Length: 175
Image (cartoon, rainbow, N blue to C red; front, side, top):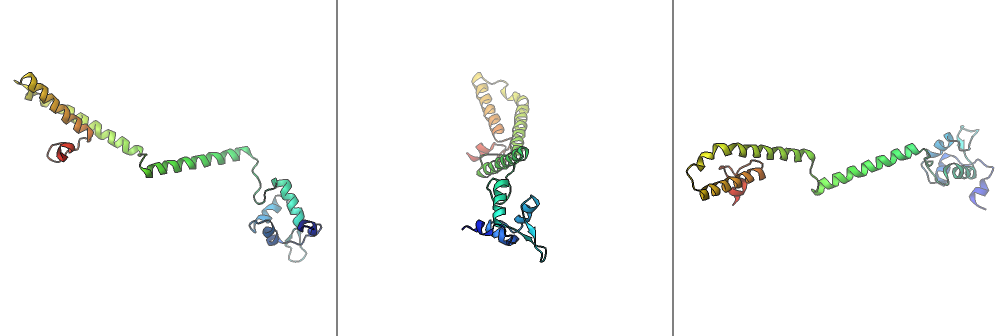
């Protein structure tokens, strides 16, 4: 005979014994009772007493064979859990990408873009004040001077207007 057959008709298992039999937390049988699991109160100390066979049958009928927490049947709750899990997964993927250095925070990108725009404006504004340098020059000298300014302009933009400290761009200071 199995344990279930031995206990049919007998309510001889307390909360802890039922928890041990079904491998659940000692508070779980009380939750089951609130959900309708069959039990009786003992005459001594008014404790909950269970028939293990009835509990197993109740679990099978009410929880589709799963022990422990009842299966969730409400689709809105299941969908909310899926959305939460997806959001957490996406958050962890973003954090991992940031740790690997493959993702830069939007604030840093915006800050760098602002630096480049400021450098562009500063370099552009200097062109008109430097036009006097072209007066009286040959076509080749003018072309060379414009090429030089263009390179300075590109360097200023590339490094966000930062310079090597002596008026040269960073790349010129390094070279």
